[in-house]
Structures are given as C-alpha cells and as structure tokens.
Amino acid sequence: IVIGRTGRELWRLNLGSPLTSPALVGWDGRVFIPTAKRIDCYTASGFRLWSKPLTRPLAIPPQPDKRGGILMVQDDGELLILSPYGRGQTCALGKVPAAVIPQDAAAARLLAPGASKTVEALVKAAAEEAATAAAQAQEAAARAAPGAAIAAALNAKQAVRAAEEAAAKLPPVFDGSERTVLVIYKNGRVESVRWYNNGESSFAAGLEGSGFPGPHSVPLAAVNRNDTIGAITANGTVFLFSVAEGQIIWSAGSHIRPGTTAPEATLIYDERGLYALTQTGATAYAHDGKTRWTISVQNTASPPALDDEGILYVGGSDWILNAYHMEDTVKPRKQSLYGPM
Image (cartoon, rainbow, N blue to C red; front, side, top):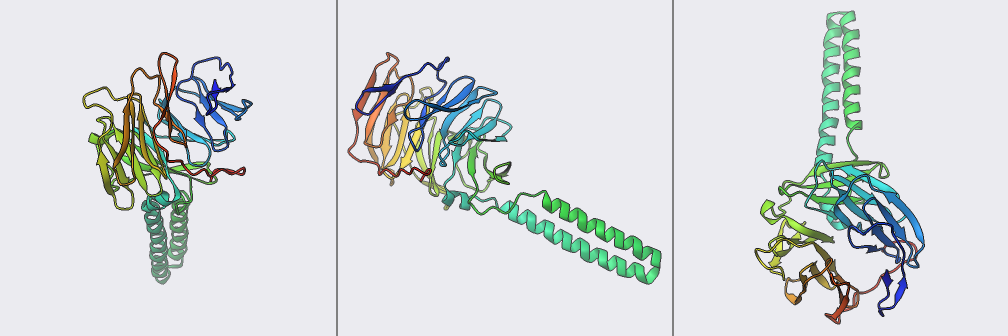
C-alpha cells in the first residue's frame, strides 16, 4: 500500500509474498520492493519496471547506492548492486559484513587503494630490472659464445613478457571516480571494493590503516556523506568518523538503552544532520554532534521513516501508522529528470 504525505492511499498491489525489509523510494519516485525471492521496481504510479530474482536470502537489506540504485548483501556474502534500470553488479565478499557503505566521490578518492599504484609501480620496475639483467646476460653470453647469446636473448624476451603479463592482470590505477563501496566486517576489518572495466570486474583492498573503530564498535548501520562516515553501534553510541583525518570527530549517546537487544537500525545523513532510526526510537544530531531531539517508541514493525519535511512516520505492530512533527527543518530538494544529482 502506497500512501501520500496527506495520508491518502495512492495505490496498492499484491506482491504474492511478504516484504523482507522496508521498501525504498528512488530519486524519481520509483519504489524498490524486496521480497524473499526477488527485488521488484515500480514507478511512482504503481507500474512495474523490472524484477530481479535473488539466489539467497538477504543478510543486509537494500539501501541506496548514491547512483539511483540499491545495494544489498545475501547471506552467503554476495554483495549485489542493482542500477535504477535493473542492471546488476556483484562481488563475493566471502562472509557477511557488519555494514556496507556506498561512497561519495570525495571519500572514494581518499580511500583509493594506494596498493594498486604501488603494485603497478613494482611490476613496472621488475620488468625494467628483468630487461636490464637480461640485456647484461645477453651481452656477456655474446662475448662467450654465439649459441649462448641466442639463448640469453630468448630468456630476456620471456622475462619481459612474464612481467608484462603480471602487470596486465592488475586492476587499473583508481582515481575515485569508480563505483566504490566501503565494507566493514564484524572483526573490525575494513576494505574498499571498486568496480572497473565498465563495472564487469571488482577489486577489494584492505584499509588496515584507516583508523576506523575496531571490533568493539561494530556498527548496526553506517552511512557516508562527502569524506565522513556516520555510524550507530549495538551499545547505542552514534559517532561521526573522518576518512581524511582517520579518526572519530564526535560520539554521542542515543535512545537505545544499554544492555537491551540490538534493534534493527537505519541512518540518514544529509544537509540537516545525522539521524539514527531504530525500532525503539529515533535521535537527531547536528553536524557538530549536538543532540537536537530524541523520541522512544514501542511495538514497532520496523525502524521509523523521516521525510524531507521533518515528519517522522512510525508503523506499529498493531497496523496503525503514526506521524510525528519532529522539526521544521526542510531538506533542500534536488530532483532531475535525467538521473540522480
């Protein structure tokens, strides 16, 4: 059932199976609807655009990918990204992470794996060294015997060819313009996954020196804006992490009570500030970490939803939808008929 901001029903449809997580609204009003075995995409008027089957249940529900599509993780560790038009990209992570965060261009440039440049430089240097050594061996062999010179020349060509083949297998040098996803595992490991060759191939690089909080602060949810990352942890702590500085800018408590079971959580991070939304309530923070407002709720079916006009929508397990006017700050709307801004 789709309801407008005035509370009037716009349209409804029968999906054939229950939702596995909340539906997402795209940049042009299109709706992404996850069920147990597929992801459906509908227009704002209820016309189905496409449907993609799922091979496994979802461990991390769909979230916006900052390019108009969605990304999610299956329970076998497969990272799946779907464009607004249903085109898919995948990456086998090996295990289910704690959170996946699509990166803005600013953060992507800062997190570009320098290892790719380093390895490429090492391979190039190795090729030059192999060619030099082979040339020296060829010259020495030429002084010794003609047959040895021919053998040395062949060895030189083989050494150079091997180095060139090794370099060809490496991913390109990244500049931050590629699709980039930050993956945070439950053991504290952080890595950057990038797609190249027009999205056909992926490359993962560990970020051991990133400074991101370790396993004692595993996030329930995380979100990126520019070169900062906001996250909420199972103990109720919300923090803002600077990728450029490699450290936490600020941390604060939330509506989550210590010692309670970690609830399902989502985060919103935009021009207005950082918002932590869970099944037990919501808390809003200014960009400097100051708490602006907080609310606790009970018997909810999923985390609340906050719209661009400061209205908080809470769906209860009693099938009643409540709306709370939490703030007067209106998010600037940037819409385009030609794609996400």
